[in-house]
Image (tube, rainbow, N blue to C red; front, side):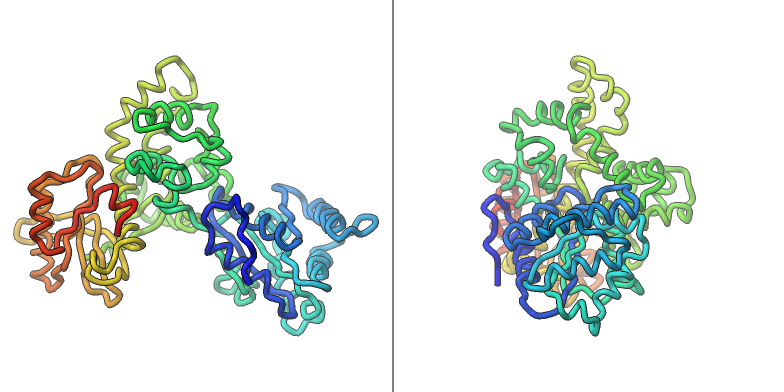
Length: 490
């Protein structure tokens, strides 16, 4: 059974359906669900809405609270929810978890523990306590219909709850990850769907995190393309804006990132264009082996991802997942001291000076990723020649000329066959020269037995008449994808 979706909820229809199905299951026996995702994505909004719709129990833990105080606060919350006279007292976490299960003694009820990592920080045994409480043959579990939902924003911690030899491995009936909005949803959310170029520029800066619009900027978006620069200066580069220090807070809030200075340095190296392990190590003047742990931690935290090369085995390039993190390290961090010391006109000059870096280190890489997402999620089988199985980037080496060719988009079908290759240019009007380069790469791949059936040209600035004519004569082999098609077409 699906619960009515709140009228003030934007999208999240699939996530709401999964939560509804979990909490509305009327079967006897307490069950466990885990909800995770990076901060500011709306996890709390979803869980509070579910509790409001069902009369459920919601409790958000407080950071850095000792075990005894956390138990006291939870007892007070349970007492208020149950309407019991006096205050419920929990002496230990065994009593507390049993108390939460007892909330479902008479009816099916969601029981939410938000910011769960805060509780575990001073109660390392808590996952094991929950494991024992949910033991299949335990009487208290069988007598309860509590739908216990654990929620947290530490990707590494929440992912580890259900993996490997963790106590809760195999116990959860729901494992829901709440993602950021893709670029199309972000455009709708910001009210910019009718202006794809402006929507893309805003996405390059703040990505698809909902809270940046609703909570941080109170819904303020650029009024038009001519207003974008002013918006960046006043609402992103302004030290009085909540977005100004957001990236620093993101790293400081994750308990796995203890030496935040070095993690920032690694992210800055990637933002500068150093995408390989050796390139990052060389940029920060360390050995590659010395940064292996830091790269792994940043991956576990959801801030970095290693994208495999589409054409070369055992090679990958690191990519920053959050546009605002990339924007901070490419644009803000180099001028941090000057931006903090506010002076009339200086921020505007910094932003003007940073334009080439914004285009090459922020807009370019994020736009290329948008084009790959378009192929994954929106491009039709007619466009690609088949359903996309994987979409990556890669490098094709030409042994004859001893040159390498970067391929921004490489689409493979479900069987691994190469369907299409593509080039993405945010700041260029694409012409025949771009198509000819793509044809050369296609010929190199054909010589290896991997001839792509489609050539994709993406542009944020449009296409020259000659390449439009070539595409029209190609019988669908050459596909041109401008911003309108990227945001609305397939």
